Length: 351
Image 1: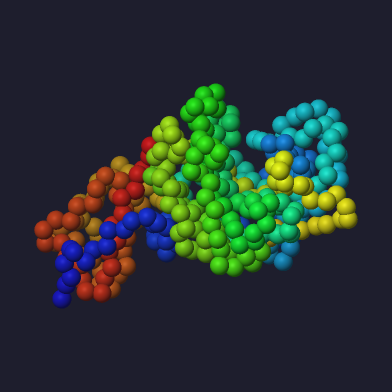
Image 2: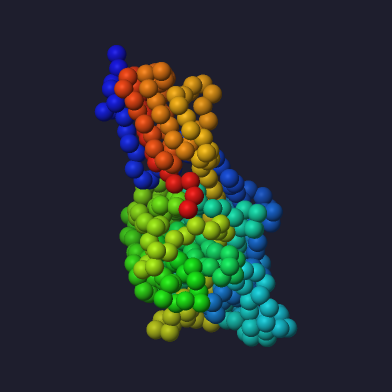
């Protein structure tokens, strides 16, 4: 007995499935050691970012009980540099300047940059009323990395100055020609920033993730999609986010003039905990044209095109997903056995 073609599932976004053999685990870190794995991560030390009020130091980043721990406190610390130098893609501090707060920032090393994929972390964020903590899990291409282009995807960021421990935000910035402001998109100028309300506070464990490809940026919380953003026209100038990015976890303090900074005394400290980070990518075989399939040997990478007829036998009771960039054609005579699920997906291979 068979079900005919109208029972085939034509899949829409989101597409990620860890059990789908087309997806491969690029890397993961469960923070199980005694210290940060510096073969994967760069740790900011005596650095800040965009003139924020905290100084990032290595001593504020640690690993404990299977978690990455980023600590923020009001231990005043003086920038140790003797001249203004950039110590990373976007790190610096003012020589001799006293910073009233210290915190932590880690980012993936260049060899772990990812171009399109699924990026996930399980995180507990800190909250203290009126302290304006500004933690984030995000990706970035900084100005100068790729010919002056810059972009970022904010998978999850917390604006603590809003004093709502249930509210997170997602965002996207594409500024692919920083010398031409009219061709830049920032959250102040468009619809990049979007706020979301959680069922439980962000001080409890949640998974935050993004699926990013040439067509879509899809945001997830606890495995459920909360936002789908087209990646073909971010902002008003057909911008898109396509260059390899690094993955960043940091804990800042908001610098808005209309929100007071946390007190400098008495002493306080709070923590951001990260259970794991996982990064997946699709396998691509976008030059391959497939006519019929032997499912015993089939490579589930994204193909250029797939054509199936009655000569293709679908395994009984299977759950199969096929992906192609141009088209998937189901010819006369193609059948799907009862109890079998077949999903068809169209993916862009490259810009």
